Amino acid sequence: MRKEIKLAVLIDADNIPSTYIKEMMEEINKYGTSTIKRIYGDWTKPHLVKWKNVLLENAINPIQQYGYTTGKNATDSAMIIDAMDILYSGKVDGFCLVSSDSDFTKLATRLREAGMHVYGIGEKKTPEPFIVACDKFIYLEILKSDTETTGEKGKAKKPSFDKLTPKVIRLLKNSVSDVADEDGWAFLGDVGSLIIKKQPNFDSRNFGFEKLTPLFESLKQFEIDHRDQHNGKFKLVYVRNKR
Image (cartoon, rainbow, N blue to C red):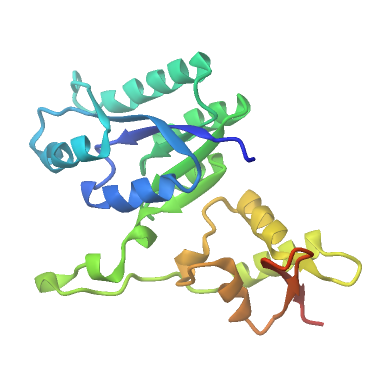
């Protein structure tokens, strides 16, 4: 039986829209159990009113942090101090840092040095240093369904997906080669794990595919083989670069 991963979820209210809360918490539950859930901000400020309405129903503990000095982000400091206290308490196996702010880059690095799993969640505007400091980084934009993403006049619009550029294709091909056997075949699960290590913000959903398998199947550069397991319950997916 797989060990339950306990996560501390720390949210920077100043940098994350409250409209993503439902999808965000569902995504976090895929990686572990949120035993600590805290959100940081100056709750006297009007722009955080929308957050207040969703905290109770998601059991998130609001932490008040006054902005004592103009131009200085006291919220970041409070979140970093709490993260270190939680780290030394030994009560969790990992952290989920929810922010689009590069100020948390050093924190993510320090937590990983201590052996913690670190998941980052933020908008696509998140700076690269924070993204690569995490084990995995998920963009909030891909979590919203078509019907919940609205454009002008409240009309539903489809989310914008990234293009499968030659750079992305090269990443996929190299990753397949890196874990392939003598015949060139690689277990797709191993390929996916390696891709995330190389590029933490890689996600098939960024390109409009729910899973990695259909993404590879859509590309002419690869061969796909579905193999039966010994127990026959599931098929294992293998991939090979076309020669």
